[in-house]
Image (tube, rainbow, N blue to C red):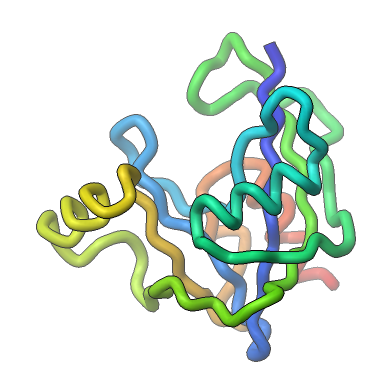
Length: 152
């Protein structure tokens, strides 16, 4: 089975990079916002839907940045192949979701509050571009994209 994921690179006016800190299967990961392609959906529509669901944010999809071009097993199910597609995204409206400055969560109470409100453990934050690197993200394909962003 192939798991297709679509991610968006959103940078604010200061060129800070938006990332998502998520608790997935008991481990914390820092990744780019986005998610899984659903049957019958195009990649750009998927990304618009994901930003709407996760951030209540309408975006336009810009330039295609990268698609994995090698075999990558899924980090969560080694029997599945992982295919990641990355685009630049641009907010159509101001980002109103709380965006953090520190990774993950301050304490268990905050983590429980986020889960109660959203049904997920996910928080968003900007990383200043000067500090952003492939070490800023957790997943192998995100590291490749981070390296490409820094090289531009």
